[in-house]
Image (cartoon, rainbow, N blue to C red; front, side, top):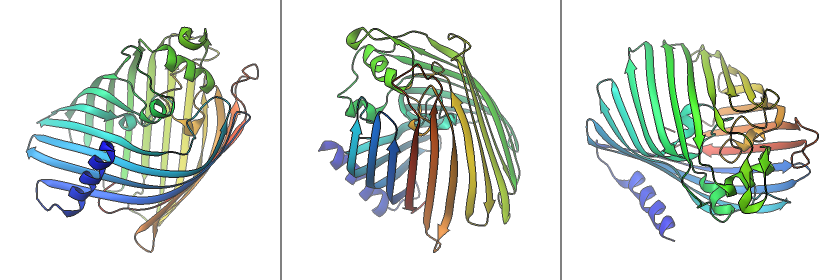
Length: 356
């Protein structure tokens, strides 16, 4: 109840408060999702409302909050996992205090891992911690950043009844290069990651997501540690033209796991024509590249490979957006009876008020 009051207050402020120090936006959306494999059969229809609120305390100090309300109905017949269970929940997507001094930026609080652009590693989970970033240049931009955090998955924590054992940690250090012009954009970045002290409950849940686990219940443990290299790149060509192209790639490698299960990749290509986007993805994620509990379910977590087809309309009657994706998820390990072939379809219809 307190979370609902907080969200409504945030939304009211974002709509009604007028101040040059404040930036606010919100977006209502409806969505549908179907998931089918040997372990899960889910059908979900939902309504969501996201709000962003930014307040500039000083030129160098900014407070940012993004939260969302989701109301879902449908069915979920799952043998092991509750991640597709229809729910009514409030999610904190980000809540940070940002300090900017010349070329130095410090972000502290609940940090969305979407900035990594690495769904096979951490998805869009929110980790509590601090991030430091040093940037040089403008059109040619070179940056170095480091994050020290406590990993957390709000949705799964709630649906699993809470994951409260111990204090896990996640460290990430990266360097990146950005080349930008009015019509083209190119970014490449590489980082080193490490997870520590992951709990038995996280391990127990992750066994159903493809990771190699020893023991059961409170004795569950990851067989391999997670410490390795992550590289991603994003390229946009003709982004302000009638016809454009977007190419994205990610490569993930865990130094601590055997070669048969320690790497993953994702490649996406989108052809853009006016307000339409059409393309697809190919992806593969080994069983032990990253903890399944924290990476993206859109790609089947771990021990999966597959393809997807994407079709988006970025402007319908000038104000609405439509996003659709159909993915085929294949098991990489026939001996793992907890992971099987499946299909995932998502459709989202949304309207943005402000910048999202």
